[in-house]
Length: 76
Image 1 (tube, rainbow, N blue to C red):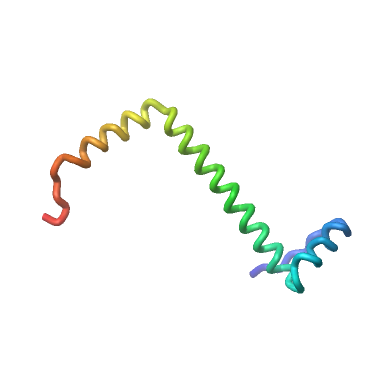
Image 2: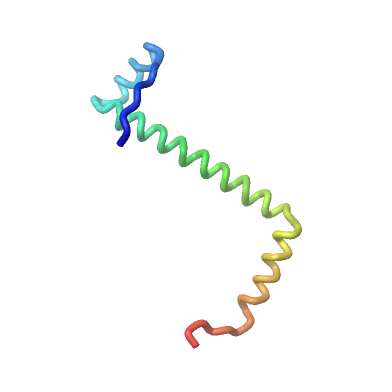
């Protein structure tokens, strides 16, 4: 863990103290971890949407789909 100093508005700090149940760091870490997870999820969804609209990518996927069912058995 790394300690940092931040400046918060008084009302924000009061809110954190009411919600944190005595553990400001834990509460703030949990909030930021959840926010990061949501942003990453949104980025992944956006990337998947872009891939779905990319004809070159779709052609490559179609080519790989053809290989998947060609009867090659990795267990040999």
